[in-house]
Length: 358
Length: 181
Ligand SMILES: [Zn+2]
Ligand SMILES: [Zn+2]
Image: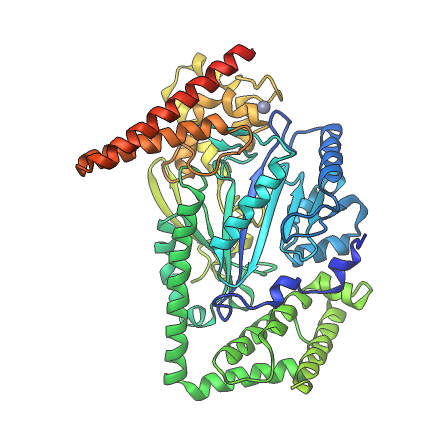
């Protein structure tokens, strides 16, 4: 048994270290499927005994099993995890914040490579999600269907010919699928072009939201594009719409980046190197500033200004500099001001380490 | 773009809300989105509470009081949830609730899912064989219509044979089900 340690030692999931298609702009692609057991009360109103039976059954049938390239699923009960460990799983996007609220009777099954995580007794009995690096929604969909078939071998999913897969919330009924793509869009964000594109994106049933904002904003220019409609459109059709929009956003982002390079090269270079300087020499840095600087440096790498820092280090630092992971890494609780100091020293350390290796 | 509620934070959540046919573009920050009930968790950028309460009250004007009461007390005999409870929290209690509240769900589903009320897409393999076959049959009949329109009669004849074959299989398995019960 590898246990929890395996998921806690590294801030960044193994799959996120690989480069996928269009990795300069698309960080990851995700498919999430919501499923429920037929005739069993949904987690919202189910009693302790029913919830426990589901956990018991899923653990018995799926713990330590492997499916295709997804090996050694680990079954973790949230009641057996410390708060800070749960928070770290949220920051790695392996579980949702809502699962933590349901800790008494909830669990998660995670594949060894952390590409697949299956939450049990979240809002729905089963929420399976699958990640791929870069822009590969079609592949993610294909493999999530296989995972779904694998689960279905043991579980009787609630399904109706008219309504499709039956979910706790009517916003998920039908396919039960939420497909999303995480994108780094600094140029579109700076020039406010993204905001102008949003209404058109909404028009076809897709949503744009900022990511990693503790309060409200898009931290580090990272945005999530996902589908809102789950009923009446097939998974393939939904993915096709999403693919079209993501493709358009990639093109526009590249175009605006090139404009910036041509029109204001020295200002752009200045901004990128100032941010790199801040990350390399700060002794105190808040998560918001860190996210903005990481975004600038990432852009600097994409545009070829910076050569000696791998892009994956930025993926890692985005997760690592979140509060819970920081404390996990420090191996103790930190106050907010202690976190800002520890964050600065951690970033300094990682950046100089990587640079020396060149 | 700034948040239209607090006018302080940048708007990070953007969507179009449709209530009683009126479209409304919403641009808010995450904090305001939670406060206004547009989102519950990070996953759900939707104001279901608004949609549901709107739906429930909207109906009051149109329906007789007695019918309204009858609808409100409609109860799922599997989990015990009433329609009134469902309309209040916006979540179902179990899979049976869908069938219990079936005839009242279409307006809500249309609002949430861009006018749609019928599932398209994946079907569970194990319990879905006959559903899958019926869907296949519908698809093939449509294909047949298209082929005839295109006057591709040879291909149409092939498809017609396939349809007959499938109809036979479905007929047999349904008879089988009856024999078993
Ligand atoms: Zn606001
Ligand atoms: Zn029910």
